Image (cartoon, rainbow, N blue to C red; front, side):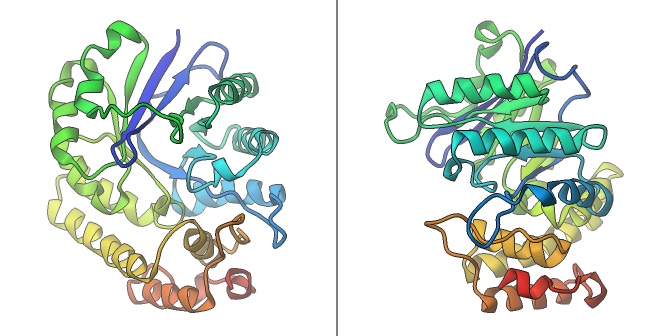
Length: 312
């Protein structure tokens, strides 16, 4: 039986779908908790550094406690990779994550629907647990759809539908998605890292985000506090996470900066982004390091030899 999870973000009005079918890996537990939107490691010449993905898997599981990944999305520069590169990255994550990761979701969105179909078929063939699809965003229809409207009657059209990833700050829309579908046991994953606690109050069952690559442990502490109804501690954890995100957003925060921070924290060389993006400045990395330390997210002992050089 095919299982489907849609994801919705009103910024750009795009939508994802994840399909869990007999042609993919056998169905596992529902996708919930933290899902790391993975980075694609690259060399200084902009080629994919496949050799460190095994270390990356181990780092997420052992150091951050994150066992679900979202591969080749925005954070992974998926749309800057060729189709063959995206296939190879997906294969590497599935191979290295076997028996270590709980859920491996491969993003297969493209400007061409044919390419999306090819990537989806490939994800099924290599045993991925699911796929995610961004709708074509250059030539596109102009209609705008709220997630609440999208879910209305969706199981009539997609009987296998399982849930939603919501990457917007409109908690009215998100709340109505949860409220109107309480009997359907959908998964509701939130995609705005710095507002996750608010979404948990509204009924989110998990989250997909880039900061869980290096703040997964801290975010899990927030989830655990929320689950035991220690809301004061949960709020303190969220505020602490917000202090860091607010700081780096003011400096200019995107894929390039995420790669620099991940290199700094993990010791795994993520390299620069692919052009036309420019790598993060040394000034940014120095400031981010100081902020991480001031929040007790990072100590001097956490830094591996060469981390700073790899970031700059």
